[in-house]
Image (cartoon, rainbow, N blue to C red; front, side, top):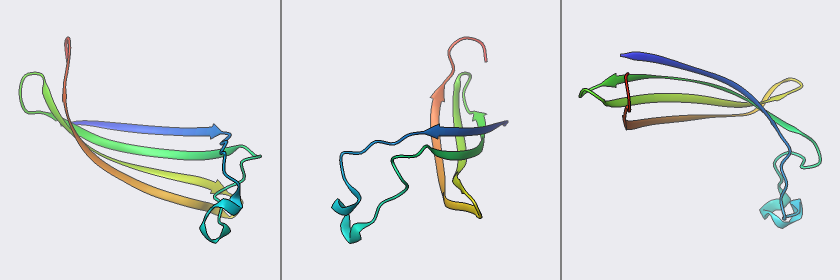
Length: 88
């Protein structure tokens, strides 16, 4: 078993061709005229089940910082099968 850890922070400006009034209930997420940011924490484990083939299980947490804490957070879970080229 090989543990993996990921930490990231992104700052982006989103552009959309839709106005907030085009969405049902007039809802909009965020303000496209400002920069948006998000924190990302993730981790997983990878295990080899054949000489170069591996199976990886992972979990990620994404959060959008706000003045009083986090205004939005989401989890993502996954599993993947992969092949290692070269030396492992």
